[in-house]
Length: 205
Image (tube, rainbow, N blue to C red; front, side, top):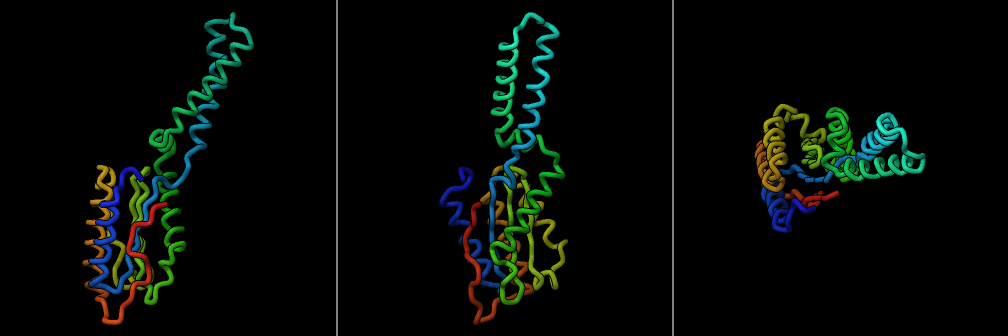
C-alpha cells in the first residue's frame, strides 16, 4: 500500500513483539484499503445522469439527431462512471451508516479468517483498519472480554481513528498496539511457557 513503507511495517511488527513480550495476549493487526468495491453507487449515478442528459439537450436544442443524442448519452455515462469510480469519490456516494456496516463486517470476517478465535485461552485481539472509510475497530476474544470491557478500548480507538484520518496510519498502529499491550499485560501477564500463536506482523488485504 502506498501509505505504508517497509519501515512502517517493521515498526508495527516490532511494536507487536514488544507488547506481546509482557502478555499472553495475541495481538493481530489487519489493514484494508477499503471494505468494499463501492461500484454500485457510481454506476447508478452515472446511469441516471446518462438517462436524463438527452432529454435536457433535446429541451434546449431539439435539432439534435438520434445518433448525436445516443453518443451524448454514452459519453455522459462513461465519463461520469470513470470520475465517480475514483475511490475517495465512490466512498462518499455511500451513506456513512452503510460504509461503517461494511467495514464492521469485514473486521469480523478477518477476526475468524485469521484464527483469532482459536487461541488457547481466548486472548486474541484484532486491531483492524479500513482506510477508505477511516474506520478503526478493536475486537477481542472471549477471554479478554471476560476481564476487559469494551469501554476500555474507546480512547485507543478514538486516537487511532484520528491518526488514520490524518494519514498517520503507522503511527496510529504503533500507539494503539502499545496501549493495548499495557492493558493486556495488566490483566494477562505473560507466563514463562507462553508461545506465539499468531504472526507478529501487519496483514494487508
